[in-house]
Length: 191
Image (cartoon, rainbow, N blue to C red; front, side, top):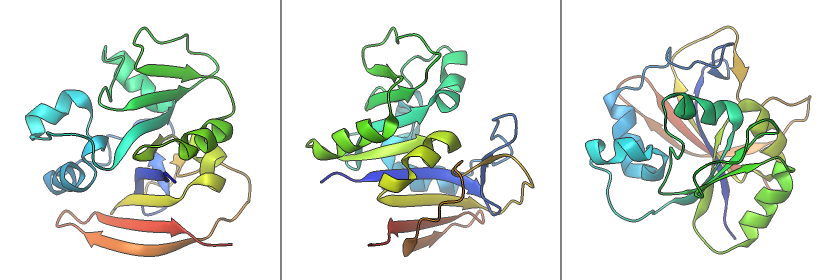
């Protein structure tokens, strides 16, 4: 069965963006880009794949799930299909249908769609964010990959916005990078 993998950058205190949704305070260093390009190449946006030398067929993910706020920066830049190499699902009750058939805007329950996608053949499913969508999907997240930035933000959009509902994950891998970013990989704990 396919896995739902929440792959995201976060601060030490657990924020994925500033209160206004911006994340430019988390500088993307060359070693982070190299890690993404090598280990999770599908997470590199389509328009950057060529310049970064990311080529070939998908190896890890073939589908991405994202919330409206995660998708909107691409729209504002005139990019309606930021991950054209993936099947793209954007969860929103306010966005109209996409002009690009590779992007499906979904107003339905994300949990039901994630369960359905996990049963279909294919590569793993990338949950790109944001915090609200991650909070809704946390019960069905199989792996959590956090690019932990050496920053304390103090406030912002949390990794997963949900009420108090602890979910246990087991650490399965750590990759420290020269920039100070540590990539932490967790698997959902059994039972």
